[in-house]
Structures are given as C-alpha cells and as structure tokens.
Amino acid sequence: MSTESKNEQKRILTGDRPTGKLHLGHYVGSLQNRVELQDKYETFLIIADVQALTTNFDRPEQLSNDVRQVARDYLAAGIDPEKTTIFVQSMVPEIAELTIFYSMIITVNQLRHNPTIKSEAEQYGYREMTYGFLGYPVSQAADITFCRANLVPVGEDQIPHIEQTRKIVRKFNNMYGDIFPEPEALISKFPRLMGLDGKSKMSKSLNNAIFLSDSAEEVTEKIRQAKTDPARIHKDDPGHPEVCTVYHYHQAFNQSAAAEIASQCRAGKIGCVGCKKLLAEKLNEFLAPMHNRREKYLAKPELVDQILLAGTEKARQEAAKTMAKVRSAMKINYFTS
Ligand code: TRP
Ligand code: SF4
Image (cartoon, rainbow, N blue to C red):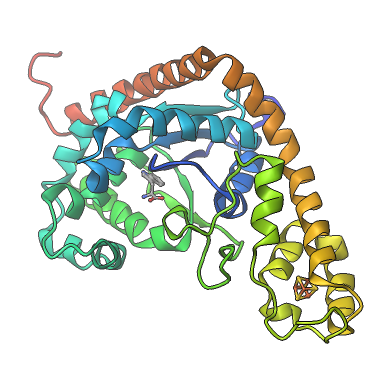
C-alpha cells in the first residue's frame, strides 16, 4: 500500500527500551502488530536508549550493541524502513527539551502513584528511586508527542504511562492552546506468551525465552527441554495439553494443527518427543524468513546504521516542527518574529 492511501490523519508512535535480544513474546505481543500497522498508518518506532538508562546507567558499554540488536530484530521481524521511521531517542534532543517542559506540569505525587513505576521499582528492588526513573513516564510523554502521534500500540503494562501522557497533553493544550492531539493506546489483543519454564511470561531476564535470532538448532534444543504435562511418563499416558507449555506454543504458532494435537495428547496417542519435534519444525519454519532478512543486515552492518541515521534525521525534522509550535505557544520564542 502506498503512503498516499495510508490513513493520513493518524500517526503511530511506539517502541522499546534496548536491553537485549527480542524474543517470540515480543513478536506475538507487539512486533507482529506493528508489521501490520505500518501499512495503514505513518509509523515512528523509537529505540528508547535514554529510557534504558533508567535501569542500565551503570552498564553504558552495552548500549551501542543493544541499540543495533533491537534495530536488527525489528528489520528481521519485517519492519520495513521504507514504511516505518526507526530512530534513536538520545539522538533527538528535542525529546529531552520537551521532557523538561512537561516536568513543570506533572506533580511528583502523580508520578509516584503510577502503578507500572511502582511494580517496576519493586521488581528491581529500588528502595529509593532516581529522579530519572520516577520521571521516565514524562520522557515517554515526550517520545509520543514530539511527532504529534495519535496512536500508541502497547501492552497493558504501558496503560498508566499513556494515561499520564494524555493528562500532560490536556494540561498543556489547556494552558497554551491546541498543540498536540491526545494520543490513544492501542492495546495488544494477544495474551502474553508463556516462557519455556511454563511459570511466567517469556522474558530475557527469567532465562525462559526463545529469541528471534536463535538458530534452528538452538530452538530445537530449547523445545526439547521445555516442560510438558508432568503426568505423562509413558507415551500412552493420557495428557493434559492445557497445562503444557509445548501445547501453548502449538496454539500460538501451529494453530491449524493445535486441536488435533490436543486430542491426540488426551488420548495418549502422541508422545511428547514427537509433539516437541513437530513444534520445533513449525517454529523454525516461522523463524526462517526472519533469519534470511537478518543475514542481509549481519553481512552489511552499515545498512542498519544508515537506516537508524536516516530515521533519526526524519524524526528530528518532525521534532523541529513541533518545537517551533511549542516554543511559540509557551512564548519562549523571544528572538523569532
Ligand atoms: N516503556 C516502553 C517499554 O518498556 C518503551 C517505550 C519508550 C515506549 N518510549 C515509548 C513505548 C513510547 C511506547 C511509546 O516497553
Ligand atoms: Fe504437551 Fe504435546 Fe506432551 Fe501433550 S504430547 S503433554 S501437548 S508435549
């Protein structure tokens, strides 16, 4: 679909903190959706490296690799740089500028009550929070609005941040005039993908992930070791697919065969070894086109850098337009006529 026939009225911004390789959970929960949406809307995709500093400020040496890794994962997953503007947060200084302006109109208490901030602080064991960590939703509001985005496709955990962005926008517009559209969250309809341990969602830090960049051998080995129904000791023991991680993945990646697999499992007609083999084949089939695209970028790393630089350049042009409006609305454009 050409840009002309896209929904010109609406613009999307979404993104991720670059903290390592992306996995199947990211694909199901967001990447897949973004690949579809890029045909319908003008899309900006932020690699939020400054936001990654809120937790990784003491590991700066990882950042440049992580930024490129995420970019490669995006491109491998089918994000098309002709359709989506991929850019690096820290290279758009207007976002930092807008963050400062927004920090005047949100209170510390509003930030303290943000449930995602609270649960992340707990998860990381912060007894005290840095100003930057407490305030990252303000910076995220700047990420979303610097390009005057209308829609923000995200997972449920991001709802409080989008709500705070909307509050900031309303207050800003009330005070200074209608500068920004009030952005809306587009909540991912896919449930979170379970991790290989079958206990919690797939996550790099929990060591239960299949990465988009895993080789076919790695995928097969990870599936081979995945937890299944503990009641199945012998091949003809009746199984309970609903408690089995392997079945959960069949449902996500092998939909057309999932019902048949469930009934064979219940009847004790398929063994876990065979069932896992089927799944590994299916997953590798699914990942193969991503590997092909990735190869191209691994062979020419400068291509990824060019894409990021061009995307960032385009983001900065939008940022400049927005900041001209913001400065004029806030009457801090002293020396322009
Ligand atoms: N907070 C998001 C996450 O942890 C990442 C992010 C940064 C983001 N800026 C954004 C998401 C702007 C949507 C819009 O996943
Ligand atoms: Fe799980 Fe498949 Fe084994 Fe049933 S046969 S328990 S679905 S791995």
